Amino acid sequence: MYGYDLPYLVIAIISVVLGTITQGYINSAYNKWSQVPTSLPGTGADVARRMLDANGANAVGITQIAGHLTDNYDPRDNMLHLSGDNYTKGSVASVAVACHEAGHAIQNATGYSMMRLRSSLVPAVNFTSRTWGLVFIAGLMFNALGLMQLGVAFFAVSVLFHIVTLPVEIDASRRAVAYLGTVSDVDQTGAKEVLTAAALTYVAAALTSVLQLMYYMSRTRRRD
Image (tube, rainbow, N blue to C red; front, side, top):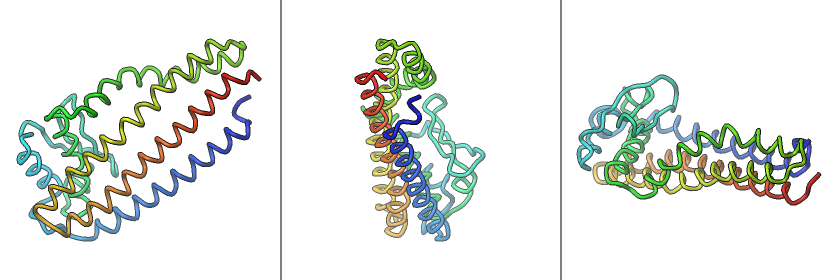
């Protein structure tokens, strides 16, 4: 079974190590700057609202959702969904995260090309992420190279999504840091640290997915 291959185990270990390191880094940065009050008036939601309005995204709404660091922008309802701390509190960390999500909303409002590309991939990713493993394993079980290759092709769609996500996330953070730099040096400094830590989680995910794709491609070349 491919799960016991040494290369597969090495990739799994790399994935766990990278995930642990990046998650620890973002938690450390977020916790540090969540103790520092923003120099701006209001909460994370308030600052995000002003950033949206300043960039012509007045139609975007802001609402609170459950969880910790579950913040996201959903283009389907054109809403920023901010977790409790980032919605209600006025720390540098909460402002950084809220403005990052506002950056995504502004990307959507301005037709940012990589945002459009990522959105166009969502339906395909939703399908292939659920089916690629079944197809690939079926190919292994029945010694059917075509099915294995199809499974790898499906997985490659998810890899592409991870890669496209990187510039989208980096650009949203750039917009947040740039906006905060116009109003507060302290908030800009904290935002850079928090959002750099967050970006590394996407880099780790993309790197791991590429390594996994290389492994699965190698399996189609050596029929065990």
